[in-house]
Amino acid sequence: MKKGLLALGLFVGVLALTGCGTETLSCTMTSEESGANMTQEISATFNGNKTKTVEAIMTMEFPESYADYMDTLKDSLDKQMSEYEEKYGVDSDITVDGTTIKYTMKADTDKMDDESKELFGFDTEADQSKEAAQKDLEAAGYTCK
Image (cartoon, rainbow, N blue to C red; front, side, top):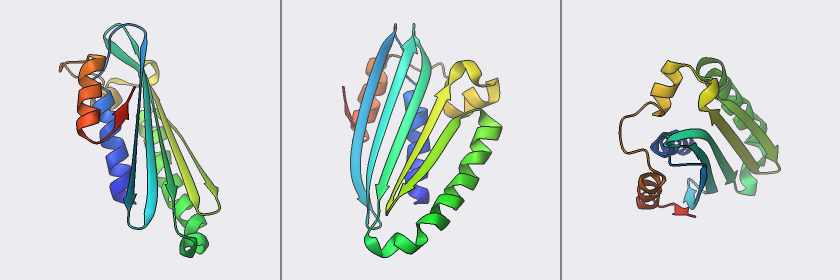
């Protein structure tokens, strides 16, 4: 689970390496980790050569044997994500439906302070083109359009 959240955070950071006009990049990846099927969706919008917004959605479907633990898992994720919201100015939401957890995180660079932008890579001097981000995400296993 923590690996999944870490991966999500890293991929949000990778998206920070994007830009070029008013464009959108959407990428998805599915995987299985520790018996859970995961789908990760990342969507970013760009204004000029800078990232404007990033939305990352992770949907995790657990086996029925995890049913009794879903609320505990949600509470744990809520606690971790509330720290991100307070400290870094991102919005997050976690919902549980049976044995499926859906985690959504949204970042808007206009609402983030300099420290938060640095943490997520929004202030990087690296290639910030949409094409560079797409190349990096596809190399990491995502399918982009």
